[in-house]
Amino acid sequence: MIPPCLLRSLLSQNTRRLACLLFAICAVVGVPATASSQASLTGQELYTAACQSCHAPDGRGLPQVHVGFPDAIPDFTDCSYASREAALDWETVVRSGGPSRRFSQRMPAFGGALSPDEIARVVAYIRTLCTESSWPRGEMNLPRATFTEKAFPEDEVVLNGEWVGTGGSRVGTSTLIVEKRVGSRTQWELQLPISVREMPVGSPANWTGVQMGDVSLAIKRTVAHSQSAILSLGGEITLPTGDRTRGFGDGTVKYEPFMLAAVAGPANTFVQVHAGAEIPFRRNVAFTERFARGAVGTTIFIGGRAFSPIAEGLFWKTTRPGAPTNLDWIPQMQVSLSRRQHILGSVGYRMPLTNRDTRSRSLVAYIIWDWFDGPLLGGW
Ligand code: HEC
Image (cartoon, rainbow, N blue to C red; front, side, top):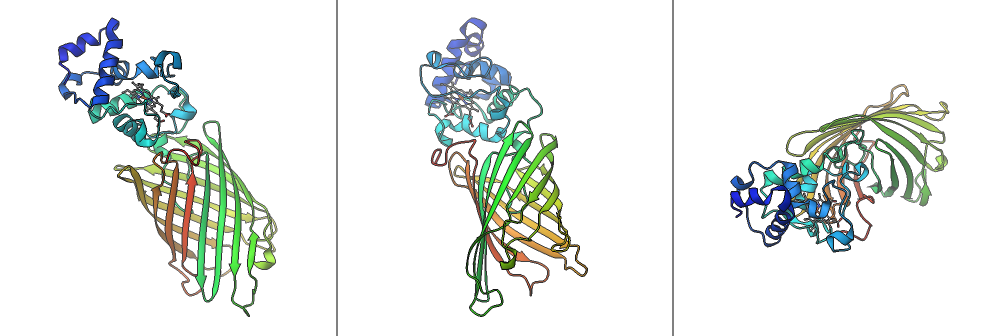
């Protein structure tokens, strides 16, 4: 416990360094501070007292010669880094220390020295150090559903798969998706689908093998965002790289305008929407397909892992006269696999709600590597 008078005198201009030391020691030995002793301190005052001895008064991080250890200190004023994080994630690191997320052990745990309120206040303060408002907030970087794409611009690699096995045939499609963010609000995306098919002997499409499907390239841009909502618009072009005669791809170039939106609610809940139309250039080989996808879910933290149960719904219909209305739903669960939470996995089960006699159920899964947050083999 730190007596209020001592704290106040320690916080006077010329003895701030001492206060930093005291806080760092409290943090390391886990001495609890009373709520009343720091009730009046703002986020910035807490930062000055407890954080700037490493993170520097301006938040850019002090050089190695000043801190006396070689581990790099992040630059909180760099929006490309700072805006991606949700406050909740930073609060976890401040409360439980760097190693809790496989960061440097030089980042102390303040859970014993600062109350949850104070941690929230000091994190809210460091989040003001990125001053460019064009960067969407990490709060809107919500868990990914299987087919409903995210509005948030990402730097990540996704490998997803879908497996169907009915009537003796087995079909698996795996798609490698590479997403690269450019600046604050734009993102490129490349999709490479690979299919593996095994058909029963004597069936009309009696072919077994591995084949590439239609490759596509997309660009999206965030057009509006706040602390709790985000809207992005984009376009995709698909090339007929798959062999149509074997049932891979549509045999025409297609373009797809789409919109992506998300809203974050209380208690880590979220709703995401993805809608658009896939329009073929060669109208004689394929029809336009309109689609709408949506996902609702929440995130809960258990033992340092994030679990996100999600219910996803899919609607699509082509312009072919008499075409059926397709509706599917997919209960699924996303789990953070690495401690850093930069490697995530998801498993779900896709079930048709309409035309059940002609369409099968399938198992869907993906793995994501958020490469901006750490190397594939680091942060476990
Ligand atoms: C003794 C030095 C030291 C002190 C004191 C310190 N930090 Fe850190 N902090 C670090 C280092 C080193 C890292 C980099 C960890 C890494 O990237 O491996 C870091 C990283 C962080 C991160 C980034 C985590 C992420 O997800 O990227 C946050 C947020 C943070 N510190 C907040 C604080 C706050 C708030 C305080 C004061 C209450 C504080 N730190 C005090 C050394 C310190």
